[in-house]
Image (cartoon, rainbow, N blue to C red; front, side):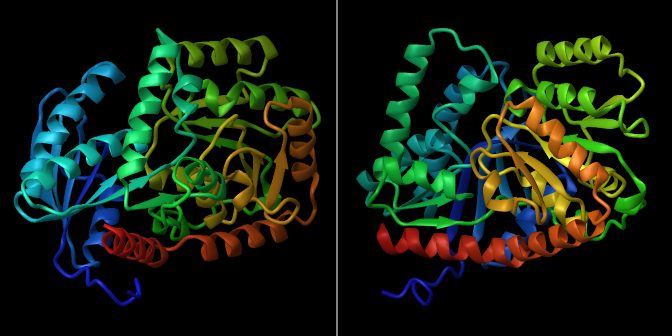
Length: 395
């Protein structure tokens, strides 16, 4: 059966299950995403978390079933296991056709719902996505008690989910390789994670690249993002570029690490030139991207690095560590530069190169052209169209 032609997706019921937090009303980025996916002519349910401790249910393009955001990951997974399974089975008995689990761990919950629904004569297809290195990332983000046991339970859950999946989704070549190692016989569809691209394409630059020497980081402040590496690299080149400022935009998700970064900045004597901005909206982020010379993503692990594409949509060159999916989007020397993760000297050299480059406007145009070809809302919707058809074909 040709997946491009059959089966029809018209009016089927699809449920996404995962860790995102949603508010009512949806923020503009989430609103655009779910509005776009309704164009597939499917009925959408979303099982996720609210931003507080009170469960909520509401409809905005999709039907949202939001569980309380409990204070620790293990409690959140526990309530998702219980609540997600119960809601998923209830939906299965009312015509649910596909579950889209947003990581292999939620995939285990989807597999449980799929197998329970079979006892009632209901046939459900299961899609499992991965947005990064699901084996290691949690251990790189925070300290884990009983790490060995935690790792074993996670591995069992991931294998159970992937064994029962009907189709898989990767966001980069690296995440695709990881999925293939676990499930070599499953069809995989690869396409980028969602971004509200209009927030970046519709925001005009306020400074030409050639007239600014500012540097931007955007992302949560955790050790995984390697912000300490960027600060050290900036300290190496700060004297040569006295007009440069470093802007750190993002939520201090790891407070201890954020405090260490502040001490690091003080130790370098750069308090007046390194700015901790905090969390901002997509529109505000686009404005920052439109007035800097380069965005840097110095992560030690990264599924793709969506923020790189967002910066390029603004015509801003990028520098990224050569890990995960980052090499998928950075054409070294064309739209940006790569450097070995953790290598302060190499990152400092890349910063010098781009801050001194008289042809930086050409690099910015190459970045904008690449990003426009790499991601678009239409390509995103088409990716899900192909993915859902693959899942139904193989269920």
